[in-house]
Image 1 (tube, rainbow, N blue to C red):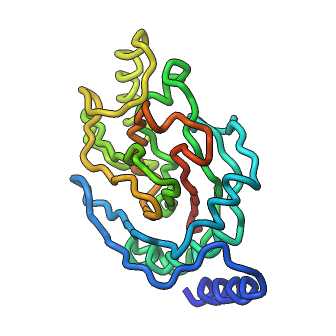
Image 2 (cartoon, rainbow, N blue to C red; image 1 turned 135 degrees about the horizontal axis):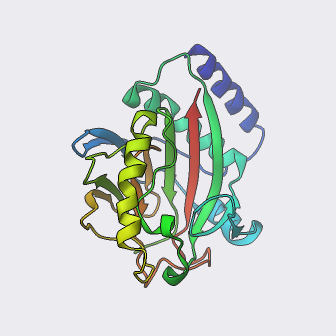
Length: 252
């Protein structure tokens, strides 16, 4: 733990020489244990004192492009590294404590991006039409910051009914994928659409409401998805779309 703290302090010293993108004057995290597996998720409302600089960057200074390396149904742009560092410095100790991350593991940032959903439902590929998990790794976390004013679709967490799984680790992957093929078979001839409600294969057991300046942290091996609102969310305009900052970190 001391090495992480030292590295974090060093980053803070470097940041002091430049203007901060966000200021965080005090956070009030709430931890909820959700689902049958009682997985903790962290919610911090009113995370930043002011989002204007970050929003200006998203709206005027970066280029959004299709992310061909993933199944994300939209466009992404790189987050400013200073912002990501500021966020991680605020929450890394909280993540260690809540998720009991072994102290010898170090933070390894993975993906840092602004994200906007833009893909029309009728163009979705089969794997984009069901809940997903980011990775089976045990100490990989998503940090999700809702930025634009709402309303926009919530973030939902799912239970796979046939297996009962809410999280997919290495030991569960083969069983889960074998069982999940039934969903793809059942829906192969259906009109493509976003997954936004429970069905015979998946049950929505918890939702996190979209609120501007809300920060959410959850393990990347949880089955989850955005409950895409077709009226408001399919929009690649960073002024009006479902703009989020996404930080993915792994502890190794």
